[in-house]
Length: 243
Ligand SMILES: [Zn+2]
Image (tube, rainbow, N blue to C red):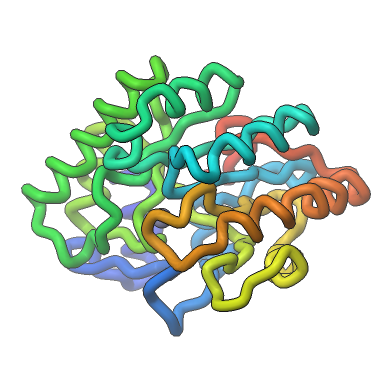
């Protein structure tokens, strides 16, 4: 039994059915994962490190700006890519990996996993993983479910694909109406601490426009981490808590 399944069972979540642990754009009413209950899923790691992650790309409209900013600050991050976006911009996906960033899987289509059957889930995640690996020349090791919501069938497929699901403990909520760099930073600071995994988006492809606000908040976020003596990097270097 995987750690994730064991934890969900311990928490009383029926993994044969729907395992709802977090929600993001499109869903409301569920807050960030409780780190104490799901430290692995919440992406909690080394207390001296912050994992920086971007979802929903690669997107020619937003990803290049993020890459430029990260290069200027010499920061590497994890990009959870959508297969449907990689198909449209395979060169950009390769560029992300070539810049030294970690590549993760976010699915092929951005759909709510609990509403999909086992066959559709297996097809989507397998197709996405193969496409992303081929385009980037990497072997992704981490998965972030669309909307942060897992399902029993998804957990089984992830095990076969050797992908570890990772959610987040700090988010910018840049999809909120009227989001600005200031509001994104304020939201990020609520959950920002050593060992946190931070969620931002490098695309507006599946949510209300906000990637520009996320990018605008990024320098201040990195400044804040530096001021606190926190290193920033990809999930693979985060020292994820396993127990
Ligand atoms: Zn997403």
